[in-house]
Length: 198
Length: 76
Image (cartoon, rainbow over all chains, first blue to last red; front, side, top):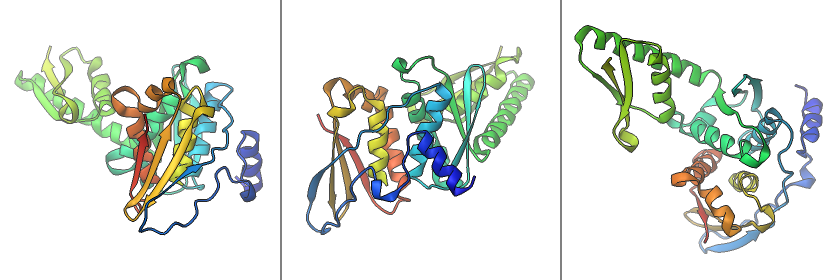
């Protein structure tokens, strides 16, 4: 997208890119030794409006400008969910260690865009340069391997501790497999999937 | 960048954005962003089990590339 197109696009969705119109006053350079406190003047933000796709795009575009203006988003809408791909810019910065930054971004985007008073909701999935697609493929492989081990040995298999999103991929992969059942066990960071013979 | 980021997110979470106050403290150790909001909006900023505010912290830190220590607090 050419710069002019981008500016026009941002303007259309209520984001001004001109520099003399900054949303916040720049922080003064304070002497670092002494603690200073100041209240920041908050410019009112235009409330998110429109369809869920429009709200999602507007929120993410605005938010990602604070990371790196090189990021761009592409949204595809399925019946029950929105799939967002973020590309351009440094993928590692927005993914974070073990995908933690991406998980936070996805959680917040769902919290903001799916606020109940804004209308019908859809689950929003965010990926960055195919990171989650590759991770999910690897997890589905792990799930199938565990299922085949359980079928062979007749014993339950316990997987590594995983995040809720990762466990979800495992459960989904095994949901159609009548030979095993999967459940989660353990608490907090230690929560893991156990695959059992059915 | 983190300040704008936190402000934008919080503005879009609350029902009463005009009641928001955001303060910044900087010292030798880093930056502390303090948020105060309408009483009924606190739950929206904190989230179930603190998940919303923890996600805000994660993003605020990521936005600085780890160059700076950032704390985000909701004042009551």
